[in-house]
Length: 327
Image 1 (cartoon, helix red, strand yellow):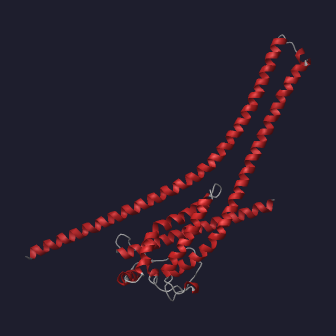
Image 2 (cartoon, rainbow, N blue to C red):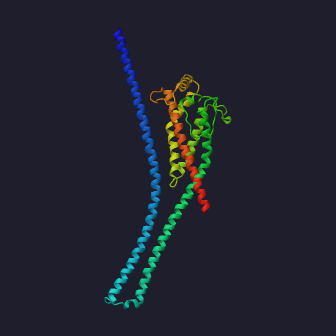
Image 3 (cartoon, one colour):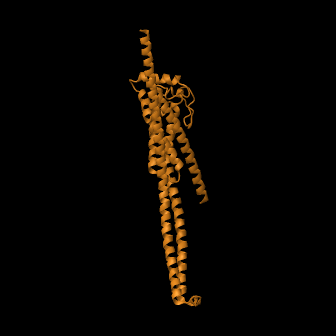
């Protein structure tokens, strides 16, 4: 009987190990699939922006090539007519054709074509650069216009993000961008927000609300602007959107734990957060802690995207000021 119990225990342990291994494998596949989709989406977006810029450049170059080709063809035709006329009316070695008005007339026409060729080519090049400068200015104005909406949304997001990862009783830095938050810093996520305008709502609920607001502002920006001349801003905006999209379901689950009827799950999550290490293995964590770790990963990725965005906007502002001073 004892042997039977031992065998049953071993079989149960094997099944448990196999189930844990299967969960690990599924989570790893999901993680790899998520990373692959993120990379594909980012690559498609960058290629789309680059292809639009390349199309405009190719279109301008084709126009210039056609103009030059027409003038060169006319010039060569006139030169051919001049040579044929000279061959038909003058013997080889005879230079008296230089005293003929027809010769000089054809030669003047050919020279005029050369002048037109140089002039039109110069005008095409000038128009190309002027159109490029105008497109750059229009894009910068559009970015600045959207940034006036995005910047307050960033400030609101940062304040709620930092309140979320700051346990009660610790110093609250509302506008800190990059942090080193650990799972233990989330232990007070269901506590009341320290921001007066939040009316003591849960930290995680206010964070979710302002995350969605900022994400919508960034999506409007990405849809309205081509970013042909500021791809680094585009990359930062899309990075924030992608990370928010992939972490949205986990964030919704964490918020749902705080609702009535989920007290057991909520208490279990808080206990796991308090007992967690600084770098827990996401595959070894329980379901509740695993969800919280996904949210924490999303927060760190959002911080990196926002830092790149704000740095790129500062560089854009400096470059705009330098161009204004040159005028």
